[in-house]
Image (cartoon, rainbow, N blue to C red):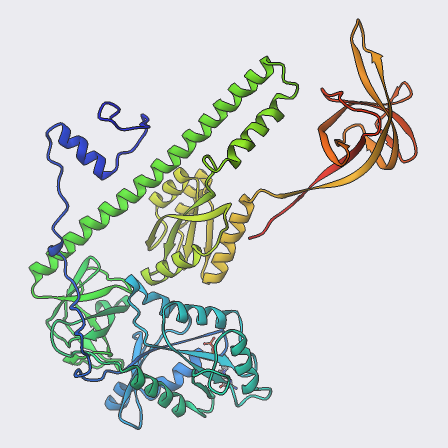
Length: 599
Ligand code: GDP
């Protein structure tokens, strides 16, 4: 490689695809080219003018702090589900349901309370949710998860309607909630903003119709329209295995799904066998903005995956092959990059160590009194030179999440922590349980495994224990992020402050014989404050400037060696490898106080 002009190559380097291809070509081999992109399927672009398309129901997610009433509101709304009333049944949980208003319009609600539902849908930046209903309990106000929900909705650019819940309760204070929201930069109507805030009670049903009307009104303003013809597209919002096999709930974005259609999601496909609504009744076709549970999957799709229609099974298989090969290739390239990076760091560490040893040897030879301190200074100078300024420390993480939506959300959230000294680096991430490979990978990269809402099998825990790999696990994103913060904080060098424990003034200097012709200069001092200890770290100051920093070589009271001297006593002090003191210099004894630092 060096002959070909590659610089900085080492025997344990891993080649990336590009270089491997070039080298193969040098030896007259043909590298296998990537598969052509047109093997994959792509969504149909939106028409420029949507105004002629029919309106579709908005898709709403309910978010808010725990116990503020998300489930209660959903239960209330679910009772008025269109499918259930039409078929006289009870709404079952399939991940979403559709509700009719007296105006004849309908709204689709995602049926998983909490934030995971929302996050699940954020695959490839495609937000399924059109509107977030933020539930805030009127007797409790804005809380941690309320703030989290506001952040999620705002970062996804999804408009919010506030439902001020539990107004039937004593102690409910709608105005206070509105004020509270304004403090968190969410300005509702009559508080300087245009966000609708509807007082409701999930218990008595009071205000619920107003909430539905407000949602519908906002959807009208936002003008949600979609083409019910052409290739069908949308997202998987839930996937599971039931008695009748693999099922998934789809939310249609455009087109109309019919039995017999072929759809591809991730690296699997389905020929739609049956379609059911939320009342569990079979239906023949479902249009934009509506959910449906289907079966007929060959493999298991993932919540958050986009699905696209394929004209036939052959095209579906081609697209899947393209995706599988591309995904593997990207993953492998990423894995290799991390391994190469960790080897590089190890290499640099060794080089630095060798450099230090060499410099210390040189300094010793040259007669420098304190070679280690000298090399430390040298190193500090090199580091503060912007050219060689060290990069901040990256803590490698292997992220595993339950579904791809939360993987992405965790990823984004995790990357917000850190500072210019230490930060997380997601070296590898994926969906599903923690595997042996994850453990080995984390062990090689010297990192942690972050598990969000996923199982960690016992044998994996044992393997991790054996490799010394630690887990950071939690089912609540912000707690997970707090745990990661704590891990990063451990890597932050502590804040070191000097606590002065004693002060002495040099009154005179003299020399004492220490055998043969050797003499040692001694400072005759008076302790003015605190205590001087034989083992103290000391600084010597001349006109407030530090001229020596180190330790004592001797502490004597007249001729007797002592371990400490108190205020208002006189003593003789010798310093380690230093004797450039004068009368009038002052000595400070100090302790180093190490304080943990936080991000
Ligand atoms: P979630 O954690 O946000 O899903 O909250 P839940 O829907 O489970 O509600 C938490 C508690 O508050 C339950 O005991 C509900 O019965 C109660 N609750 C919810 N909404 C109301 C309401 O409007 N009025 C009253 N009085 N209680 C409510």
